[in-house]
Length: 144
Length: 144
Length: 144
Length: 144
Image 1 (spheres, chains in turn blue, orange, brown, green):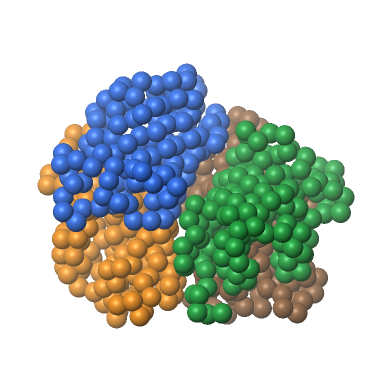
Image 2 (image 1 turned 180 degrees about the horizontal axis):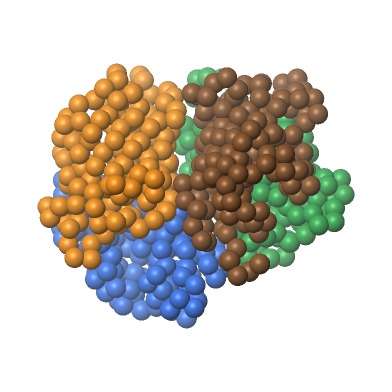
């Protein structure tokens, strides 16, 4: 497994992922343990209201979703894969523009996958707003 | 400062904290760097739907909110206090019952506060579902 | 398995654990997923030199060792258990006295164990100098 | 400040950094918030003994040292900068060869600096053995 259709991933999220699945996040690519997605500022997802900002739970939920896409690009649609650790460092306040997240796996073993996701406000990739590392536990191969 | 009125804290959350403020979390006490809160499973907050479970972002958002209460019980309503690190370890799947979270500060310095929050499904405090450590940056005393 | 002889644990460390095994750490008890140990300030381990302080690697190594004792009190001498995550928060500068570390497991599953270790300068348990959370990967039961 | 003489950094470490300063780590470059260093397997630092492996505390100590170099390349020799958080993920067992570590800052603010260090066995940069994120608290500018 190597490349995942972004539209298919978004459909899975809308149907199965609570909260984050409703934000309208769109993937630009999902391939070989990497993924890149955009969270749009729109009226639909409520992020465009006056004084609105992208909250911590939104950024962590997006990072978890992007890393999940990285994992399934390596192991297939392992719906049993579960996050065991999420470590988020909040570096700057996001600006009221689209949020971009880029993830990559640093290890994909038989039992554990580990990677990092960097998030930035569109147009300012050199000033990340949040950096997240995540560990996923993978189901035993014979559990399917 | 030592004791915070739980109702006042809930009112601040409803008005100012996106996403988490709408979950109907209720505090049992907030005092001297500790706090305890309950997230009810209700129709109102959408957690009672069939197949529903309490997601990772909900648990992390609740932990952040509980730690924020711990911090203001020590430094007053420091609205400028910001989370700089949140490290969540997901230990067990929450059961479809109320979620309890208990937090305590391990340090409250002039510039940084650090503490931990343990979350469990109501009735099973000996089997935590999630353990979170958090760091808050505190605004300089002369910034007010 | 429930209770481990502290002297036996110290012997394993001296023979098998590089660096930390040479510090002369002594366990007070190891039982049911908890453990407590003391790192003495002595001439032998070099911590008593003028200007000497207990460094970060020493505290992290001690925390790892104490959590390892907690793990084997639950699963037996699983020499294959390996640390996959260690998250250390340094809260205060240690004083030039013995260092105490107390650990407890929050989860001991089939594949992962997770716990926390709190370290303080002897005589000041209310002011921890370091708080560490750790995850261990456990070998499959049929790997022996 | 932008570029630091590697030999000067190594001299500071030998004189001031306990444990890690004695390992013979050599910097290849320290510049603009990035740094790269090598830990040699030699008889001198005891890493070459039979059955020897590079332990967790050694990798964490090296990561801390490399990030410290990244920090001083941005703020000058801030001897008061202290590590407040170190989060290490152990991904693979190091091979018995030189260990390489590369660090980069993701943020260098007035009060906090945050970055990541990736470590790998020489010759295998695509398979990191350890990934570490670190936060440093910086002394107030007027404290000097």
